[in-house]
Image (tube, rainbow, N blue to C red; front, side):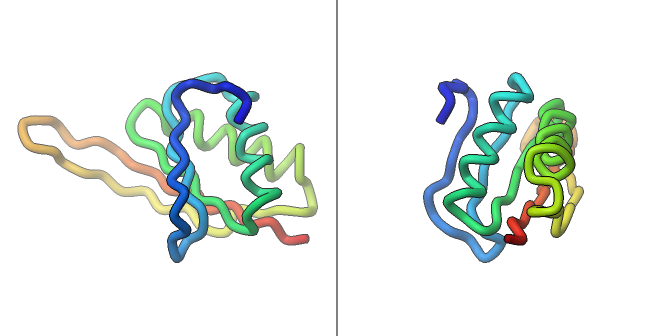
Length: 101
């Protein structure tokens, strides 16, 4: 990884592929991290909550439209919310990126 402190990789492979949890962080290093994961795995799912959602959307866009244009695509986007005990609703997004070549 590029040394981005607040990125969490779940090493287990899920039905939707490898999952990368995005926190509020710089976009370009995170995009490079996603690019690295797409080299290892054919499918990677970005998971973000609350204020991290714009970062996840920007990262997915940069990778699919610039870094891997024509070689990747956004397969699925799921938007949801969750409520934790004694806390307000928090929005969640899952963006699944697929390497096509």
